[in-house]
Image 1 (cartoon, rainbow, N blue to C red):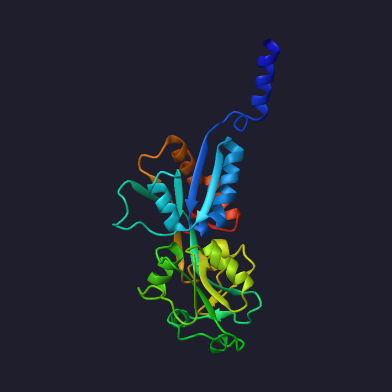
Image 2: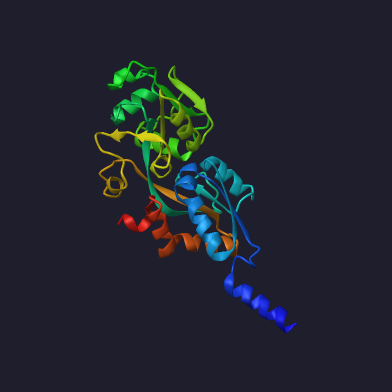
Length: 270
């Protein structure tokens, strides 16, 4: 018996959390967030605490539906809370991002204006030649569901309140920035809106906007014009394990990790 107890104590010292924790946390939602920082941060949290983390993307609308249905403990969102959202949901900002426009790496076009973005979504620009590029059809990837975070940001900041509609240059896809990024990676004619946090990890080119490059430094200084917040959404009566994870994400240590991943932490923008 004595040797058994000593063995257990030895294992506890070696693996204090991972060996004995049976807690599981699940999250889904904003693809920009999950790819940009949440998957990496969740791995670190699991390593430190032993809590098993299961993170899924799918877009902000999916995350919201999942948490309302009780299918996940928290969701990631790049959509700001509105009056239509449940009073039982709490939106907590945990990082910063920026709306960006992505094209295939081979596309020689480097810059775009907000007016040109509006013309693309209005179907008035349907060839890259109109933007100083090659005589090549422009394919604009748009979502079937306009409630996602990237499209909400696009609508409010660039399209003057008008949501994207199918045009002759459109290719309608599922409502996930991850899907649009992957399509642009494979499509020389492609164009899509996305988030800086995830797009920087893809094999795509992020276009300058009004001559300003979407770099982390330019987003932090607000020189790049399309900054936006990233949230984690929890229920106000969230479980203790969920609250502990949220506290961790907001902690100085986790915020430094978010910054180290190349995303933008709260502390980096005063």
